[in-house]
Image 1 (cartoon, rainbow, N blue to C red):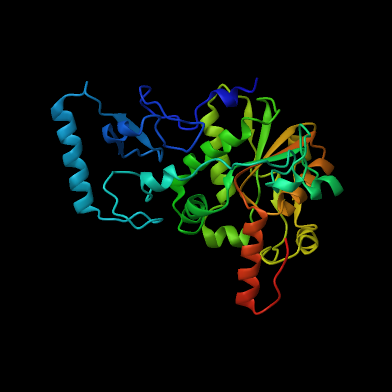
Image 2: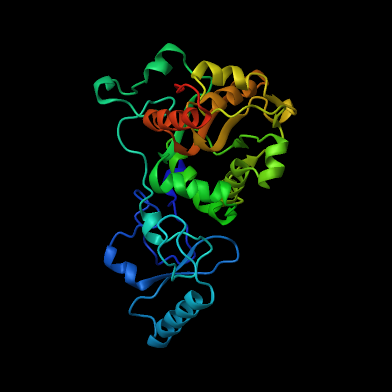
Length: 330
């Protein structure tokens, strides 16, 4: 059994806290106990929760409420998703209500690429496949994602990625761990983030995939034989935006964009490729193809979110409309 599945998504400092980790992050089993929990500041960037149940002295609860009241006065801020006032001390500018809306992707999924299957295409097969994976199997062995790229999860990723809230990386890494729990991989593997073009990395200040990958490896602990390799796979040239491109155009756009600079580190190794979002799988497929040609044994892909076909069409249509062009098809 993969021991990742035995670990809770939310590893908190207080062992007395119980979370429903098989559903939404930060969602307690008993909603009534929300009243007794508060988020306190953690310099490590992790969310730490403290149980303020009846066994805690009244003076402790009073001090906690006073601290939160002072925080809301001295550092007024709003949730960057719903814009409601933040009254709890936290390293994340997102309220608990919005975080609780982030849930695992539901419905029938392709057993290879993780694409959501339409009801009429669901078969009695134990491992159903989407039409694309039936016609052209991807280079990677399997791709998994925690949730659908929509609503609160999409907004949370944008806050992390474009507003540079890097303290969100540990929570995103927990989503990755939850998704990867079902992969048939051993603990001895190499974790590789999808690389950014150096120019884009300098402009953004960081590679979002690398931040998530580092937090993921760190959360596994020193006992796990998991290695982070953020240097062997590089992006050798800048590529045009994938938004609005057809599947064929995406593959052509990425051809030759990646290369392996240290084959010895990945030869005959199982690779876990990590990124924030997977849309059509063109980027993950090209990275996997390059890694396999360089000698990797097998490549798995884990992302925080998976864009459904409906979301891809919406993104492509918006991009085409803003550019005055024709709608693209992913």
